[in-house]
Length: 259
Image 1: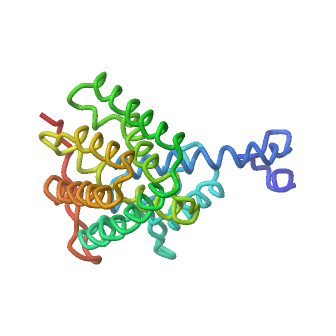
Image 2: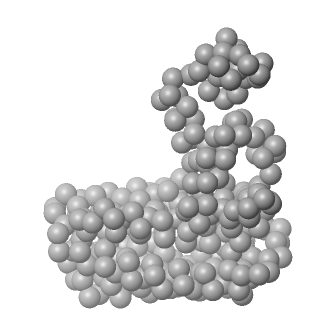
């Protein structure tokens, strides 16, 4: 009807004026959301960047309505900031937010790991081993700059999820996933500036062995150290992106290749 009255076509409409199936629209909207989320987390869209509708509409080949829906979802996830009449921008990165995020992640991951050690089955243990193997083998194939790989980042997230997957709380897991994605944005940004990477494969293997051994106290200590050391590396390697408090934006430096 709208196309017939206005002579316009939009995403979800064809030249004949008939709408695509609702399922196709939802699939396209979900795809755009995933692509934008990835571009923000990987810092393709840098912190503090103004998100103007016309360039984004052309970049992602979507309608204004689908783009606005995706941006609203990203606002809810804390990756985009809505400024009322001024539009949207990629959420800035603040030192205070990173430190607070780190503290909350430690609490949540420790709780999830503790519950998973209590409730986990043999199949849960097998999935942890498999997730570590996939991550470790890809690292070996990629070489020294493995941490710049999107695929490795996904497998890394999958390994950490496997450690907590048996906690039997969908609400807690959903909250943990949102925290992990926010932290991943800081980590992916900082990896562009690191001269070298600490030997995380040793940390990951130790985490795996400790969780499978059902040593809850040791596992809680290890996951806290792992998370806090990651934060320390972000601060050490990407402080130019971090503002001390909300109100000012950090200077954006040009990414450099790791040596």
